[in-house]
Picture 1 (tube, rainbow, N blue to C red):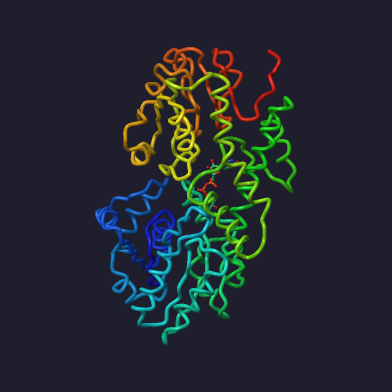
Picture 2 (spheres, rainbow, N blue to C red; picture 1 turned 90 degrees about the vertical axis):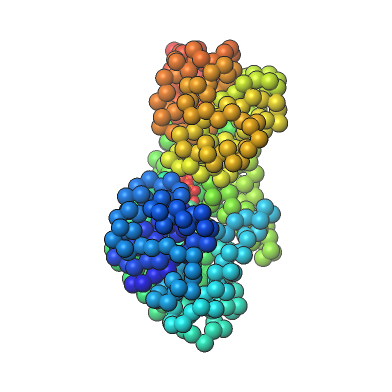
Length: 436
Ligand code: UDX
């Protein structure tokens, strides 16, 4: 099938590459000329594990090409996938300006029957509004469906081919089947439903996962109060198959481009529809609190933080990505800077992005994690990069100065070893001391 993909962010680019890899002919539209230039030169502007290989293959075979011209791209397409940004407006509202602009372009340029597939996360009700406002108004036959993505950054290719379900929402009879066909090489339950229910599935899924994380973080905080150990508590609770092990890792809370934005959006959607989503409000509040709890732990161990040197290992919101959006490390660094801390930060992939976030040299960025810890009173492990977990911590300690505090924001380090090495070790809910 000839498909246009609009937007080449994490979602659009992965979709474009994977669909081209399945044999479809894809034209991807990007209006940021810097990004477009890179893509046309064969350079991927984001980091996503394994994507480069597929990208080189499908661009080399001529199955994926790039343009900034929607009109030209649509000429031969029978389907258009929208994967543009839907950022948060801060108060929870979702900025749909890019979606609206694309919808206007489509109805302006469409010259043949077209299926519009929305992959951007849009609030429940948006699809029906877009149909009323744009797609149902043109004489041309336009069908509209919502087809959410459930891709994790860093695991996006794996998730594309191994998804738990493919969801397609549409209000026109028969339309879902046509979209199913583009996923014919993927074995997964395919679930069809109405448009607004599909939009709700996406928000409800992310909100539930965020709820699991905030729940386990609250249990971890309580473990510290009563002297219990979150590691064994979470593992054992997760052994109940009705609960499951995943998303029970306590730490600094969730970040990234989806959970923070989508939980706030769902809370806002509830409010404007006259419903107070109390549980979700608590999930959001607990998540913000985890960052502050981390800073408080540093204060408990170091006293006044002013003029202290603290290393932050990990800037990305999770390992294997260069994405720092809503990353706990960024919030923690903001708090530390306002306390007058000299912050030395390291990350295997995200330093370039973090430099743009802290442009005025208030943070020293150092690629080598050992060097980053040089002369520091404390180290915060903010992202559980495998390289950081496996550091030679005895060597790190030699480079630090007293009182040698390690705040393990991801409960990823061997706490017994850290204590044996002479660190003041603080985890999240790991308060129980093993008998030595
Ligand atoms: C998420 C969803 O998983 C994906 O389905 C959706 O399409 C987009 O949002 P992503 O943001 O890439 O994907 O990250 P994910 O791996 O789900 O982790 C989100 C955040 O939660 C990270 O900051 C991670 O560190 C944190 N997390 C995750 C925890 O703190 N504890 C856990 O147990 C799991």
